[in-house]
Image (cartoon, rainbow, N blue to C red; front, side, top):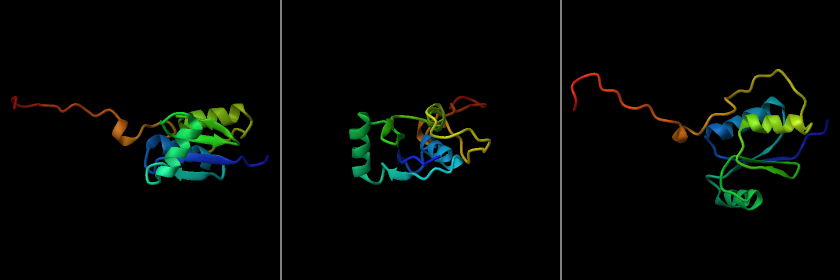
Length: 114
């Protein structure tokens, strides 16, 4: 099976971006990891190609998958015969938000009101 051309527009430390990386590594797929946080030109290119501002976005053989999780990338690649199933475990969660987008626990007060 030929390796697809993959360009991934990702944040350096985002949970969803790390999930996309984990899925691509699970299948030993080479990819261009484009940093949309530290390189404004890459972010602009992602917006122009995907038609929207949310990330991650992954381009596989010219097909843009916008605002997608690692789980969704894997499902799309399997459905489109880009990869064949394997039993490897991804090295990161594949559907986890960025830390700043995760719900925060409410503070608890066990003593007298402050």
